Length: 299
Image (tube, rainbow, N blue to C red; front, side):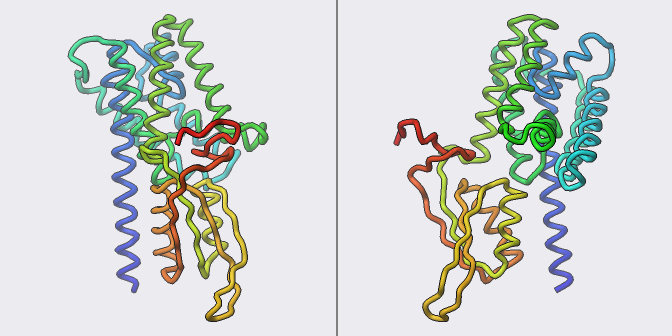
């Protein structure tokens, strides 16, 4: 039994390491091999670092590392160690891989093409962000700063809106530091990044499913879904007619990809859980990936 647990921990560590390296590699390549050679910028932390290194002849990866560690410290002192665990791996991996890439004289595009470069940066950075989010990792950029602002200053404001304001502010500054065209290219990058990230997290189709779980560890599952997956949960009491036993059941509406996270969690913590997964044609609400109840459905 002990050997199996060690094996499982080893597999989890290896998976996490691969996710961190792949995410950091894609994000670093977007910045070092595409964005900088084409004279572009972006929102978020890369945009901030681009502005600073435009005025100061400092190493890009070193400045990125310093800001990344500053965000780690901010999150630690405001939100605690649990949130730091999600960002520290990529906060270290990003500048290390960036530094290595800076030693190579290489550009992914054979000649300067700002529009193509802005699209490519969006695709690569969206892939990097999505891959990291799937395993619970974050690069510690404006998303982490947005969480601090929300939970410490503006609890009533959605994180997405705070991030939009932060990224938008960086892009507006870029228009003055570089030029308006560069800022517009940055908007293209941010838009494509969000779409690629969303596709990875929700699936290309954006389909939602309803996961109903009867488990011996309902509170453990509720905590996992709410605090690790950041999804809403509904619980209710159900009765098994054969045993006449009342149990607390859990229902989650999420993406098909997230339902596999729930499956993996239950396989580890309650292998006797009973789970049904139902594909939904439409979900109305204000949650992530749901349709606005005021809008007309496209299906």
